[in-house]
Structure formats: C-alpha cells, structure tokens
Length: 475
Ligand code: AMP
Ligand code: ZN
Image 1 (cartoon, helix red, strand yellow):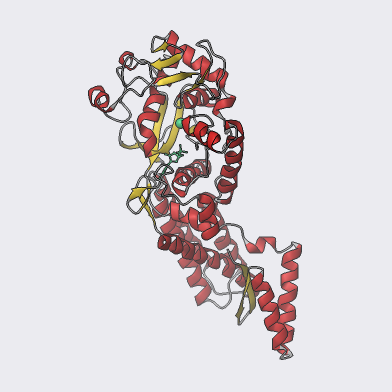
Image 2 (cartoon, rainbow, N blue to C red):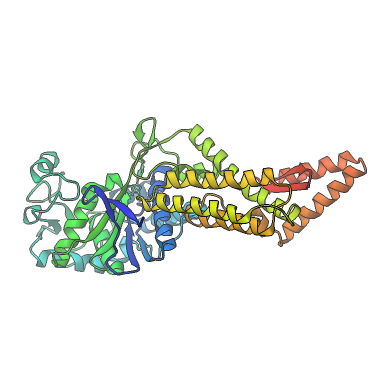
C-alpha cells in the first residue's frame, strides 16, 4: 500500500502523488512568537515532523518550510506590555521555540522565514492581487475583495451567505464587505510600520504565508498543514490570496492537512483562554520523549486529551522502549555467542511487523497504530531475551537496527546511553561499577552504597543482574 493522506480539500483519503516526482514541497504554519508555545501548539509541530520523516523514509526529497509570525496585534500588545520592541520580543520567543522544538526532537525546517524579513515579497504579492482585480485600496489599507472570488469557502466548505452571516466589520476597518480581509493595514501611532505603495503600514496576518510559501516553494505546493483552527479563516484566505496572485487557475495546495485539538478539561488548550501547559513546563515536569510520545499516541486528526495521568502513562511507555534497548545492549555484551536460536525466523517476524508499520504509516500516517506495532517489536525482542540464555550476534544486530529504524521516524526512544560508552563519563561510570563490585566482594557495603548513591544523584541508575551490573540514565 502506498501513502494515502486525508485531504481537507476533498474531505477524503487520497493517494499521495507529488507535483514533481520524488520531491515534496511542504509548508506548515508556524507559531506567533509572542510567548512560549504550549503543548497544543507543539502538536502540529510534532505530528508533521513525523510525516516529513516518513516521506523522507519513503525516498522523497522534502523541502519543508515553517514560518514565524512575528508581526500582528498580539505581538504589538505584548511588546508594549513588556516595554520592549516587537523585534526583540520575536527574537526572544523564536529562541525559546527552537529550545523547546529541539528538546521535543522536532527537526528544523529547511527554511524558517519570518514575516518581517519578507516585506518586499508581501508587497509584491499584494500588488499582483490588486493588478488581477481581487483587492482594493481603502485609505491606506488594502483589502481582499471577496465578491470578486466566487470560490471563497471551498476549503472550509461553507457558502458565502453563511460566511457573510458570521462576519462583522471591526471599528476602524474601511472595507466594502464584512468578509473582505486586510492584506495591508495603514500605520497606527506607536505601531511598527514599513513603506509601501499605499503608504506606511504593516501586513495583515494571512498574506505572509502566501508570500513566503511562493518564495520558497513556488506557486503550487504539495502539502500545507496546520491546526484545524487555521482552516478558517487563515487557510481559506491563503488559498484566495495565492490563487488570485498567481492567476494560473492551478490550485495553490494539492493536499491540505489539519491536526485536531489538544483539549484540557474538554476545552481547547489556548493562550487566549489561559488554560495552557507550556512546552517548557511539560518538558521539565515530565520529559521531552514522554511529551512527544503522548502527542503521537492518538491519530493526528482526532482530538487528544491532556491529563497528567496521560503524560505519566506516556513516560512509562517511553521507559519500556528504552529498557528494551538497554537490555539488548547489555545482553549483547554478556550473552552473545553460539546458539540454537533461529535467526531466519526472527528476521521473518521482524519483516512482518515492518510491513504492518509501513501500512499504518501509509494510511494517513496513523502514528497511533504505528506505535502499537513498535510495542509488538519490543514484545518480540523481550521474549527472545527471556527465552534464550545465549543469542547469536546476528540477533542483536537485527533487533537493534529494527529499533533504530522505527525511532528514526517516531523519535520516541531517544539517545542511546550505550552510544556514549566511549566518552569519559561512561568510562568513569564503568570504573565506579567495577569498584563497587570489588567493595561488595570485600563486604565493604558502606563504600558500595556510597557509589550507588553518588551515581543516583547524577541520574544514573544501577541494576544488578546475574550477568553483572547494568546502568542507565534516568530521563
Ligand atoms: P499559533 O501560534 O496560535 O498560531 O499556533 C501555532 C499552531 O498551533 C497552529 O497550527 C495552531 O493551529 C496550533 N494549535 C493551537 N492551539 C492548538 C491546540 N489546542 N491543539 C492543537 N493545535 C493547536
Ligand atoms: Zn499560515
């Protein structure tokens, strides 16, 4: 089965066929950088990171672009409140975004464009829309002319009359129709502004994604993603802007993907409601792998409930995965050798599971099912470890490679303690374990306990087994 994706344009699963064979252009809406991201914001970044990894695993060359919205009303208000500039506020929270995203294993995009670094591109996109007859200037503002765009509503599947009924004109807006939206906003006192053909001002929110996606990915792109709250008006407006600017009759985006909400006590987690757990806090309180595990444990389109016990369960899941790998490493050192073990059979079982994993990932990247299969792999490995005193070196290579391959896509097992064995710290740990073994032999329990406690204080846990002492880092 090859990849199918649920496309919000058609509201059904469709086989994925990129515009250019072997290449995927992928744009994902990024954060507005006026504060820390919360774990709801982190959901699209984590789930679409996995889709990107999966596409690469399947052999595509992916160009992935994710923007930073660094100018809008919220940015301006927050900068005023904190007595700083909008630029400084953005710099700070872009840094914090990368800190959290790196910790959560979210790979960096190929380009992370900032709106305020693309004012010329934004202006030229607006000029094209005006020239094509789909926008008008009104007293220093520029508005998209909805009446000139009959297809409006095609993404969110609402007709113009229904949308009109819900729209209103905000004080100070000088538009012809309540549904018309601002592409450019005339300067207001105390706000950052840039020169433009319509006087000084700043871009509206939606136009940045049209301008920056076309700059880095072209006028027609394969995949565009974001949270479901962005479908209307943000993505609907992007479609109108981009297609009105290109005027080519070709769709701006072929596959629109939206993740469901992260809920807390049945409500959407959102900065405006104030019911947030920041990614920063979550990483401290639990651990980054557990947060990532939790976010991938549901299908990306379903809602997911935040509750402390769900995060604790996720942490236990991560521990089970990590234990399997460290048990494997330890057994490879202590129990590898000549054995009756049927390697061919084991290889076949791994292949079957790999096929199932691939099926799950190709079915609209169902990470929930894919994680279930990873646990089947762990169960298989653990059973082999339990039932066989000695295992051949091929078993260890196959098992370790399988875990690594799954984790290149899901990123929930994390760094391998054993891989750091050559560094100084690991050598010192091994030395202390040796010293502790000698102290125990000499019945010097005070010294052996002291060594165990000092390692524990450094986050290193020892486990005594018939084959010797294992160690692992606590998360
Ligand atoms: P923002 O910085 O508010 O523009 O949001 C960044 C991304 O997070 C967007 O793709 C939003 O759709 C998404 N998002 C915001 N809140 C949630 C939530 N509670 N659950 C899932 N996604 C969310
Ligand atoms: Zn966007």
